[in-house]
Length: 428
Image 1: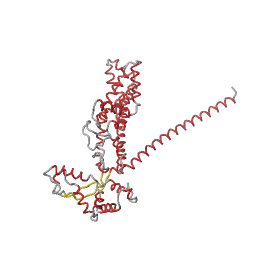
Image 2: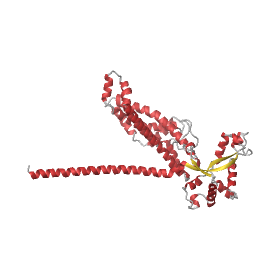
Image 3: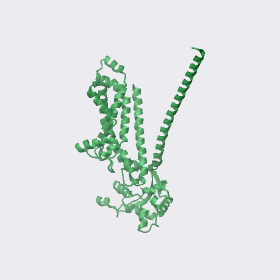
């Protein structure tokens, strides 16, 4: 080969090398741009939800000197005490603070500044502590949702009355109460300690959180042992190449991709119509979500067991261990990080599901906190769905706040998965 041809070949190879390196740099930049875009989209979602929902974590109360009049409250007769006119207890001191609210119409507007649940709060106080009867105490009662939103700046004072739902004189009365030091800002503990309510200022997520806990507990207790046992059998004991083994594997892979609403229909037909289990109960919801989560745990478990080196099994068998001892003491501990990761991912998906639970009636209005998996309940995603469908403006911030709580639960579950994975890897 002549010298000119060799130089041409070297020069052509150098040009192709530079082109490959440029393509490699372009690919890395494209991957980095995709990662930045994904993080930016997630951050935008979090900022948008947080901007709408952070104000739900505090509330405004009105401080009233409540006179627990014995003429209104008869502690000797529990039935009369339950039917007492508790509204008059807080309306009287409110009128004394705003004496210019004269006439029936003006007084109705004044009363609408306070939550309709104020009477129930006073009733609960008297029921828990009958010694209040005959005394005067300064009690903090929640403001109505529209008044609370005005003080938070969620409703503009300059908007038309039809948009802000408060008249000009209601705004003036609200300002007067604030100047008198009768309006306080406090942490909205009722959001975490109350059940659902038709009044936004009284609504809480405790019933939904409790229902989610019972539902996920049932799901975990059923899906985890069954999924791990199925993965061990299919990977360690099932005869390979048999038609029924292939059929089981194909069905498991297909079930992992079935839409969640199909599992809801299955639960409706089997657990409710055939087995007659209680509707809207976390037990039924856990059974449905266990069926939905089971294929994910089986697939993740098989992949984790398959990743354990064959030499570990052979060494244990060579030392005289039985096949069950090999699996129990060597294979499962080594595969547990992957199994736990798949389980937590499946449970996180179950926590965010609402479609299958809507089919079994967990969309009902639940104000009382469930005490067992057999009591009527709802879950946090369904509660978010119900609040998002409500016309009251106060539920907008409650919806976003519930979404933040749900995302915190998901982050906690994924953090738990990472912690357990590292702990089991350290044990290896």
